[in-house]
Length: 469
Length: 151
Ligand SMILES: [Cu+2]
Image 1 (cartoon, rainbow over the protein chains, first blue to last red):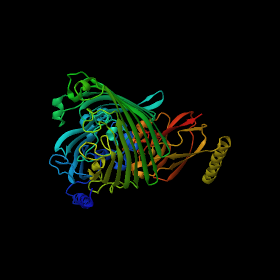
Image 2 (tube, helix red, strand yellow):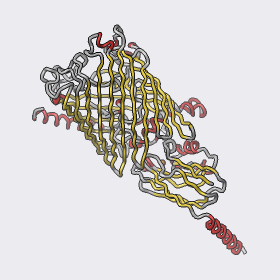
Image 3 (spheres, rainbow over the protein chains, first blue to last red):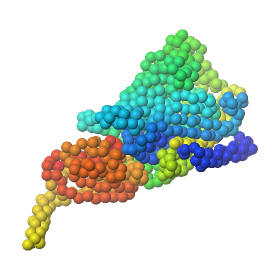
Image 4 (tube, rainbow over the protein chains, first blue to last red):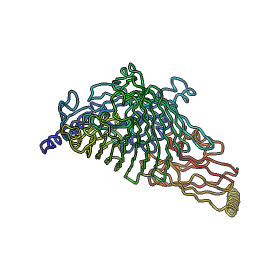
């Protein structure tokens, strides 16, 4: 990035932040903040910080809320469980992308609406189960909860269903130990998870849709989001041992189109793919620990092409999380590693993979910090590596999936501590500056695509104002 | 005459108390409550009728309205989950619903970060297991509970 470009970016960035503030301050729009879903806040009668540190990072209370199926209520709110999120943003990459960062966008320095979402999240019948069904039936109805997100993607300029989950949760006693158990239907394996180490709710919590991202990623890391339907069950035993098992199947093309998802080129699961999760968690004083395993095993049709049989993809994930609060400091350490074994019975025949089998590894380590619930930041190291496969990684001149680098982020969450403005208190706003630095991108440090583009050309400066209300 | 009776009965009571004290020394327990919704002490053993002093310290740092803690000892047979379900809707009463006060043996009110509270009472004469909870919404379900064992 030349100095002139940098000056321009900074100026634009300032304008972006100023516009967001003006937008918010004008009061035209009901105010701000989080995938910390404000309808949850209204239902529980608490502010976002009850469940989140740097949203949407969950704390112990937030994990328990999710475990109980989004159903726990204490607020006495009689509003429907609906909330919204808007993310105006600005993106600047190290070097522009010829032909535009996306259709309708310039090569570089783009303003965008990263996402605008509506949520129906909380108890399935909101606060209305009792008036609708009477007290005794409501006691059962209120064990059903939902997290339904519908998103307008301002980069692709389309509406689509986002993460969607229906749950039932209840408590019991087994062998004298308290147990919370539940069942769910959702459209993204790992969406159900309680920690922020697994891919769906992992760091970064938001990122640009206008910057190149590495081509290689494991299947469990976003490869099936919103394309599949799954049914699962889970239990937390004595607040210590968490067990979960689910099965996923790719949804039909007409249904996906109806939900705003384009099924072209998807990795299709024609049968049922198991997803599993085990975790051991413990609290010591004001700190909590978790170590766990997760994974997915799928027989798949590459690009929805069933003419050459099935591939087999198995993901083994390991993760660990440490979270502590010491006076005004909230610190969370997130670690995860995923090993993927790919067997290309079909892909090789179809000319999509060079090798009969490949391996892929992903590692991520993040430290997230928040001071006084207001000022925060994060630093994250990420790496992807694996077998060389020129056909599979056709965008890489070396045929390698290798990418690695750092993500640096600074956050300012002005209303987090005390809640939003008096007329709409369950709201929030996060202003963030994120910088992604690539050391390697799609196989190389320099000229990774064979056309002269270097890893650092994809370095991304991303500014975002995240409103939730 | 009235004064005499009063003095007499007071002396008698004192005598009983001293007598009990002589038999069972006062049990002192200090419990910490944390932002992770746990009590540092989850089992307390006492003798029937033993005098007890319980101190609760909120060692967390989160604001009281998001992470307050209290300590409520329930009578035998009182369902702790039923009590906390009613408590969750009793924010105005600091999560100690008056309608269920008859199920409570002793309690320490809601504490914010770095605050502490004390209560003293006599253990039930009836041997058995008595539940205690933090009735702040959802804390009991998250593990903030324990038992007083009288034996
Ligand atoms: Cu508590």
